[in-house]
Length: 481
Image (cartoon, rainbow, N blue to C red; front, side, top):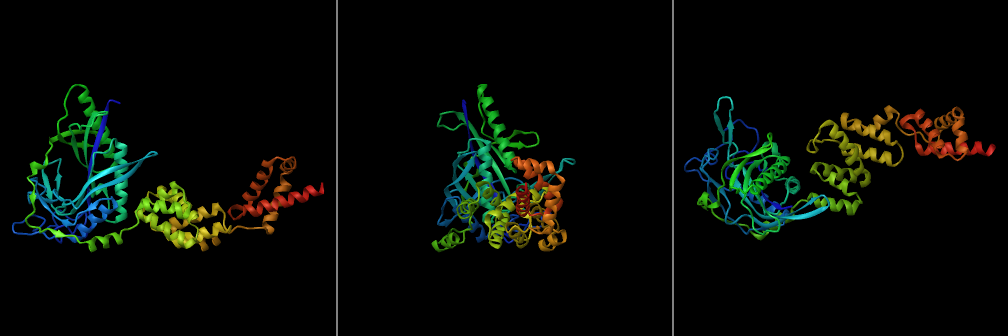
């Protein structure tokens, strides 16, 4: 390979605080346009911002999770950003002293793991939204999003492919969800990424000229955009051309990007210290409290599940893919006392049912106590695996009581009783050739005879009891010969 792709990501995460970063307006998604604004977030003269302390705490939590150093002082800067979706004509952000710096995020691509450096995490306010009417040619401005708190997570240029970028974003999304600081609904714009990309000759230590693709709102789009832009730049350089530093727009429908404007640099924004917000100290006791209340993250749960419960890496990954699923597993494992069977149920049958019903993990609502009863019944040999799966589906789709459902359907397994023996005798009498094969040492003959019994008894049949009764009866027949 002649060229190496160099990528850095700037990820904007809208925080799930109830109010905006510098005022008391709600951050709820989907309100009527311009119904969630006030003099502060709409940039009225004379209005003054007041920092939402929850934003600072959320930023520190993410910084801790990403192995960053947390600043001991909260400092804001003013970024002159004259666009129609920012009514103040500037943005309150952080340039000179970001809240978090110098961390890393470990990713896995295939069998390999890699650390992606985090340059910084900084707090800032979001801009509004432009709504374009393609029929009339008019553009409307909705300022509801102005002032919604953002964390911008800036990686080092350590990413080398679309696959690595996707792994990075998936892991970052997982952390944000487990910290409960962002809903990560990319389709609603609460998590979006800017891609900074350049290419250089393999072995070179110098970076090439980079382009930036803005506001990509799906992980798949980021991966596709990286692959397309890297091909575009390499083809341009191979023809003897030069890459222009510019901001490009990615069209995911067409699978291509096009130039929007020349890329701005920091000096273009004329940063200076924000005069309306005083610096605020972040004490050691404040940080200690955040550290003490940090939740267990997904990768920590995976390690614990493997070590404590002996669960496979695949099952652990499925169980920790969403906080709701992990919570269900831990409740179920505690109630039934059998973590391995609980893991098997959720990662297998339950996931199959969810996929078939197009139910997302965060939408799942199922009674763990009902599933626990089923785990106990199947592990104690009181219901068959087929009956177990049938009842799980009934609980999932109809929220039935497992005990009542099993009784109504006659699913409790019949052991060594008259019904089993009657079916065993019928199978032996009706299949003399299979009996003869059994005495000739053909193992499949026993399986065939048992199948006849199981078919007659249905899901109430206990395979262990059936096998014992069948072997005992065949031994009696053999002894008489």
